[in-house]
Length: 227
Image (spheres, rainbow, N blue to C red):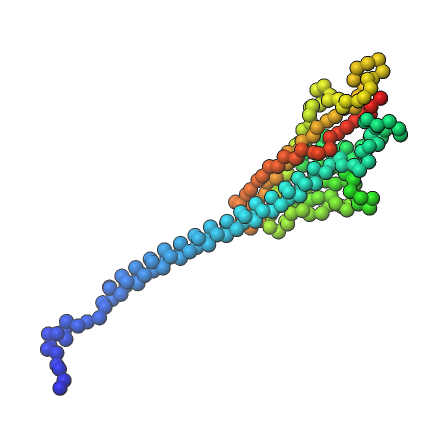
C-alpha cells in the first residue's frame, strides 16, 4: 500500500538555493587557495633549502681541497741537503719554499712542492669569472661547477711569523758564527694562510654562503745554512 505524504510535507522538501551554492563554492575556493599557498610555500622552502645545502657542500668541498693542498707547500724529499746540521756537500736552498704572495691578501696563490719525478712541481688556486680554479698538470682546471655555484670571493691572506721587518727567528746551529753570535744562522719563517670563500647559487642569487679556513703550513721557510 502506497504511503502518500500530505501536501504540506511535500512543500517543505527542497534543494540548495543559488545563494547557498555560491557561498559553498566560495568557501571551498578559499580552502583550496589556502592549501595551495601552503603547499607552494613548503615547496619554495624546500627548494631554497636544497640550494643552500648544495652551495654549502660545494664551498666546503672546495675549501677542503685547498686546505689539504696548501699544507703540502714547500714539501721536499731532499731536505737533508739544506745543510742545517750536517756537514758534507754544499748546502742547497729548498727550491719549493717560495709562495706567492709571500704575505698579504690576494685572489690567487701559487706555491710548489715535490710529489714525484714525473709530477708537476708548481700548483695554485685562483678565482676566474666566478669559478674557483686549480693549477694542475700545467694548466688551470675548474674546481667548482659554474652551472650550480658562482664563487663571488676568494681571498688568501698569508701571514708570516715573525712579520716582515721584525727580528728574524734563527734556527740553532752547532757552531757560532765567525766572530761569535748567531747572526749568520739560518732564518725560519712560520707561515699561516687564511682562506675565505664566498659563493651564491646560480638558480637563486639570494642563496649565499661563505666560509673560512686557516692553514698552518707544515714546511717552514728556511733560508741560509749553518756555518
